[in-house]
Length: 147
Image (tube, rainbow, N blue to C red; front, top):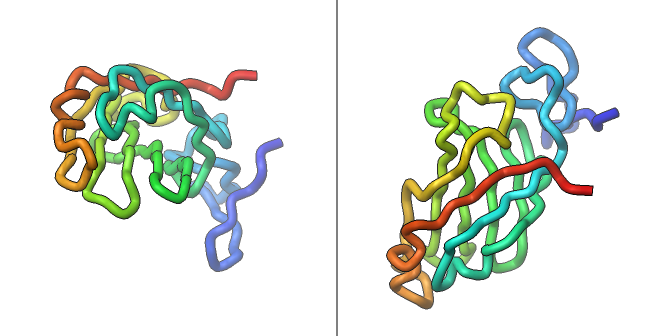
């Protein structure tokens, strides 16, 4: 059974139909989304090359998953107007790349649908100022956690 979601105030999260939200409560999905997913990047260069390969992200809140290290955050997010996507963010620098899935909002309950491509990038604070341009063909796929 999936764990229940608690807000920072300690109260249990409730879906719009009044049922308790299970990890990870998002878009009233039934069955609920998984507690963790894997994001696999390819084609990244410069400062972003570190992320080539697979990283596990865990439920952080409704429609938000996160892998955090001291230097970076890797987010998997559902944007209501756009669909599922991922963000690589270096914490103390203006060095960020945003990906969006081609599946769009029609797959609100399936983050694994589609392939993600870059929709925005800022390498002004990256050590390698060509990180965005050199990564222009990068993609990512989202998958269920492998055993």
